Length: 184
Image (tube, rainbow, N blue to C red):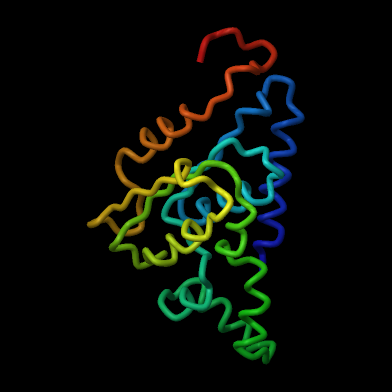
């Protein structure tokens, strides 16, 4: 699964950010939608506590067992690979469990806000909510979700404004990166 490299890239991106002199290592936030929502959850999980807060939206690649029954992609890719290799469903799901976003949720400790759509046929609502429901190491006060009842595979029109307001609650003003003197 190509996510192995993609997930490592998420960690390397955080490594790069904290290596930069003008980046406040205490104020790294992550946001992304769809596949980027998956990467946002994974960055929060594997980032060794370096993500201050995260905002995944319309997240996919969670709950693969159900996801592959409902949506065409990535099911078609996995089924073709399964056909070529002869692996059983049990073997395929065992392998995919290493990349299933919901299996990263217990490693997340930072605040999370998420947004998903009830009419999403690409990443259906219960696929979106699966990792959120498993955030056992995030305080209830630091978890939020919002729902778009009539949208398809898209976040709310004001989603960026919403998650930026959420992020503002968690900015650590004790550390300013070198060269930045403006008040936040």
